[in-house]
Image 1 (cartoon, rainbow, N blue to C red):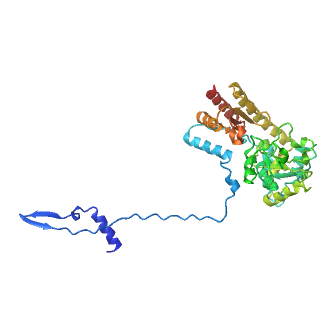
Image 2 (image 1 turned 90 degrees about the vertical axis):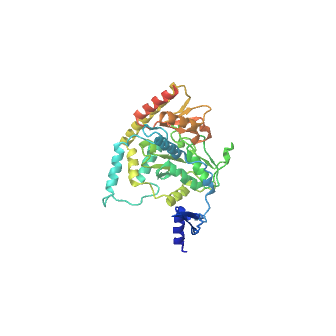
Length: 398
């Protein structure tokens, strides 16, 4: 019997009762017995599913990356925000977490970028690859605007696509055989990029053992190079992100003084230049036109007005939490307010605020162990959103 016939017979036998057993019929007072034909028996056996073979390469995973047990802080905050929005689709969620600018870029800056972009459609204005270190007019303007009396020259400036990228490039310069010190709490990119490079270990009090350290500048001094002797021992990374609302445009710079030397006397700037030329084709020429406009008298005035707006937001947030009896830190030289919740988990407080007020903050522990018990509230936001968020904070903690 063919497989098709067997399957057909098997299916029929399951629904035909008269084939199941001998049956007796009575007809006209005559006893006639008829034995049914014994049906064929089909045994169904479930075949095991074929196992899919997953192809793997011969390349081992970077063991250093495997040490990063959690995701990067801000994508995790975004993931939780998105989940909250799915849970409460009608809620007006206000984001005061990541330090992303919200106010429009001043027209004096965007018009310069537009003009440069339009020029690219002409023979006279077109340009392709530029200098990896940045265009000379912009490098000169950065040196004169921020370091005019500090001995930093145009060729000490390396224009980039932002400070975050330069942090990783600096790691490439120094390699894994150095020890890096970071303050706690600190910008997560400092720590994570160090771990990826293999620079992991424990804090030591003997700072002379550290080959280099990351330094986050404050308003006083405005540059590390205001400190006497800093050009022989330090570099500085900065960006236009918060100055000009360039978080999406992407433009920054790093200062590597020519006086900065390795222990064998070789200039660090030469190695940094080699890394830049190897891994970077230079910042967008359109973005650099915007950066140059930022540093014009009109651009500096416009940027100052936007910065003033964010400082007003900062004061509103600080006044709110101070009025509620919280210990509040920061907010003086940067638009970030750190609110202390003693004895509580930063992520728990983050979750409570999000659940009860629909406001996104940032858990302090994401910046390091010393940030535990704090949440960071960003003052980057539209004024009406900041005011509404503070109204909700007062309702929650009154």
